[in-house]
Amino acid sequence: MNKLNHILLAGLAAFAFSCGGSSDEGDQTNENSIYGGTFSMPMGSYYQSVRPVEIQKLETAQIYEQVIEGLVKYNPKTLEIEPAIASEWSVSEDGKTYTFTIRDDVYFHDDACFPDGKGRKLVTDDVVGTFKNIYTKDPENRAYLNFKNTVVGGEEFYNQSAQEISGIKVDGQKVNIELVEPSSVFLQKLATTFAGIVPHESLELSEFHPVGTGPFKYDKSSNSELVKLVRNDNFYISDKDGNKLPYLDSVQYKYYEHSEDHMDLFWEGKLSYIPGVPITSVSEVLEERIGDFESDPPKYMLISEPQLSTTYLEFNMNTPVLKNKKVRQALNMAINRKKLVEKIMKNQAYEIGKFGITPPLPKIFTDYDFEGIEDLSYVYNPEEAKKLLAEAGYPNGKNFPTLSFQFRVGNDHYLIASEIQNQLKSALNINIEIEGVEFNKLIENQAMGSADIFRSTWFGDYPNPETFLINAYGGIVPESMDEPSYLNSARYMNPAFDEAYERGSKTANKEESLKAFAEAEKILMEDPPFIILWYGEDLMLLQSDVRDLHTNGMRYLDLRSVYFKKREAKDKEKAEAEEGA
Image (cartoon, rainbow, N blue to C red):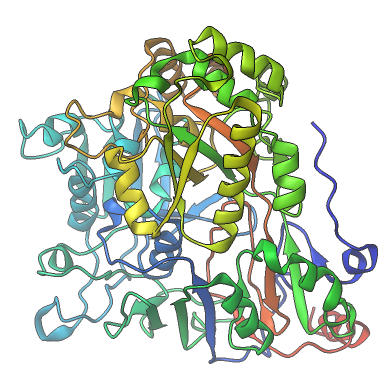
């Protein structure tokens, strides 16, 4: 698989690029750390406060990751699982029982949900309560879809035939969790925000806001356009020199209607971090402002790395014309992905969509059959697309109905949708009506099937093909069209796919699991519910005085050890690092 050639200038790459890591020189001793300051970044849509089990958006998860902790967490540099509220854990020989030791020094944030507003100690019952939240029957509960058929007794609790989850037992500070089948991804699922531990008191409020044990507390003055987090002075973690974490005073996330506004504020020093440069600003970053990245010390840092994300078009499988497999195959072959990425996206992608829904990141997905999947994937072939459409009963697009296509509102998204609209008209002579929709509304429309085609970008909840393939799993589709269908919002149903997917999910043997998931992926190639467009690799911008911010392919941010310190010339910084070593 050949990665697309980027348009990055050689000088910029030499001086300003950080690939797949932090923005500084490493995990050095923090003797000269500076307490204080506000880390700020933009939101791409209006914020809505939801329970952890209801989270739909990556940016909401990024906010909650600073406030709410789970039993375990990701290391932001390596994405390895490490302790959080659980100080340690063990697994039985049969791989079915996990025993977690819960820390005895963890307190929930001070909040009005507690008597006198004083945060109480986290206890083992809070862990049990988290799983009861996960297994509560509720059409808005997305966490259940990830944990379905995982914990013994979970389904009985979900179906309200039991008042407790039989597979969870408490013994002093230990919590034992018994699984239905061994799992290679159970710990990774526990590291997601779905399994974040919140006090039952916060869930009993008339209006939920996040309360957790993390390094930052939610400021209730937050609103849909500005989310404020403040330092948790009672956070139980210190750095290796005994300094209490976090270093920052606060974190802010602000919504701007136009993504171009992000750039102006960043250049003015009013934003610390930009998670994705708008495609209309790529030339400005890579050409007009090259001096700001090449200077010594640099004024700004530029980061680019493959993302655990896939951008695709999703078919509404209840649209009559899209029930025809040949129509879906024709639409797949009519899209010129290479032109879309190179001309419209300005090469801000890791690779065009010539594999399946799982992004082709061999460093994360080792031993996955990407080559076999690529052999079955779709390439731009307008002649074959026309032939398939004619075989489906629509020669040269005759009598083909106009399809509605919804996407996230924004200039970048409109440019991409417009190009797709033009390509389908040119190749197949069919009409597509495009509409930009506010992101929260788009999620709702997608779950309810309110259009024929939707554009989606899926960030993996954990580094495993399962978190991508679940978007086509028929076992989570509700029976009624009146209920929202999250994850599998296409409402795609294919028994052969489901069988392979379940086989991959129900084994702890990594080789067997990956083999089954690759089989499922190949079924999606032959019977496509999606048009895979590209795999993510955005340009990220960082103010140069931001230290110890580690980036990764999951866009998982851990701000507990981030601090601000002005950069000196490279030789001086190198000498200071050696002196402090």
